[in-house]
Length: 112
Image 1 (cartoon, rainbow, N blue to C red):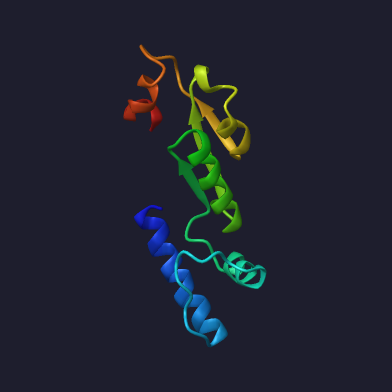
Image 2: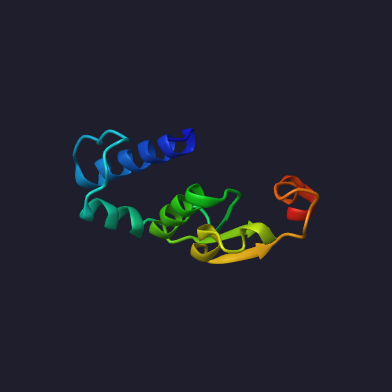
């Protein structure tokens, strides 16, 4: 898992520990139903998140963002128009065609 995921899990772990009066759980443990409800009821740090990934990673980011109450926005190229991440994200924006299928994803000016 990424450093951000680990840090977020530790932060949530500490918050839940204080809320429940118990020792914080390890960051790798899955949240129970009650704990997930408490986490989902916390104010998310952002209203909307830009997912700069494709495929399964983008779907996982979307699922986590939804659990925190955030909207997801992603990008795709013509070659990725039938990809799962395009169908799962809340909002998607098509990039213009590039020299290669990956080139548009690397053009920061076009994405901005």
